[in-house]
Length: 99
Image (cartoon, rainbow, N blue to C red; front, side, top):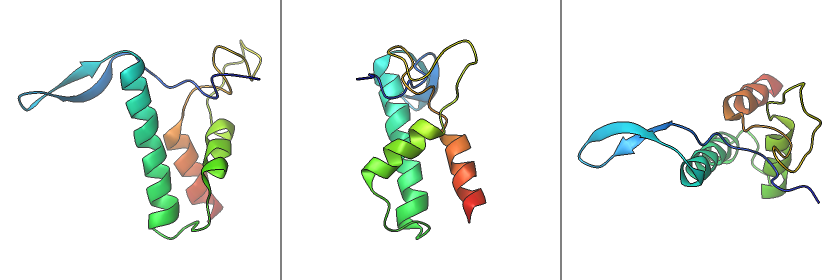
């Protein structure tokens, strides 16, 4: 079994900070927040905006894995990068081009 399914960027992620400031964060918390936000964007575009109203969580997982960025230096899937690096912008662009 391959784990992780996908790798999310987790180094110097732009974010809001306390006291009305912006800055960067690093680590698994920042990576998880970025992945969750990206998935929420996919769900908004597909389900809420009526583009793919019967989409399931399993299908979203498959789309994210298929749309992942991959390096020619590695074989995928693997136990370091999973199916590749999260690429929500590329995934949404591909979805828009399907319509």
